Image: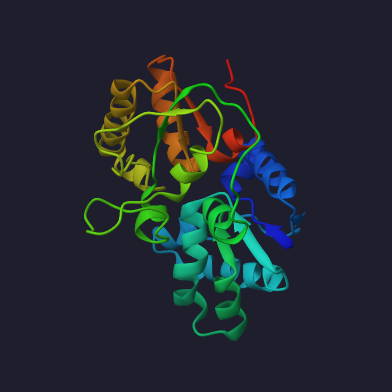
Amino acid sequence: MQVALFVPCYIDQLYPDVAWATLEVLEKYGCKVEVPEAPVCCGQPMANTGCWDDAEPLAKSFVKNYAKYEYIVCPSGSCTSMIVNHYHDLIGDDGQYMELRRKTFELCAFLTDVLKVEEFDVDFPHKVGLHQSCHGLRELRLGSSSEVMGREFSKARSLLEKVRGIELVELSRKDECCGFGGTFAVSEEAVSCMMGNDRIHDHEHAGAEVITAGDMSCLMHMDGLIKRQKKPIRTMHIAQILAGRPIEK
């Protein structure tokens, strides 16, 4: 199975181990992975702040460089959603794009829906709180959200439950926003920080040693608050847990 791994810009620059962990997991389950030599930003920061003219060339470049692959996988719900849900506003009904969006997956969705992974040969004997990011829930339907009636499910949680020794703690508000929101964290710093602290407190109260998520951007926001307050809790992308990474001391 041929897979193009799309590494978001903030992961490429700040959290490269998340990309390596994603690569290792995909290769372990039989994927032939390539990382195209192409721009590593999906254009979401520009689009979210209304700079559509700046986002458009990135969208067109992405389609040009990734269209040839059998699948495209990204370890970020927000970037994946930008590609599959919002490039249409930049590109329109382009035939090449319409085909590309059908084969572009967030990592957890790819592991559950395409590869259908049944077990992970790794141990992670820790208490873990799962942060379910807004874009993943509300735009990609990676899990159920509390404002919508229906069957309760979480693709990320179903994967973590296959890891030996892990204990998933129960949160009181399991699908609440962390407050990051990209440029929102800059323009509305006080609100963003209050929301982030609320999420951290929920994980702490539940006894989590580690907060995990499918979006490193959310974890980056909460990790900054955690470190400034010298809290003992750690953050790890779900790919790092599935790849068998230990907790960093």
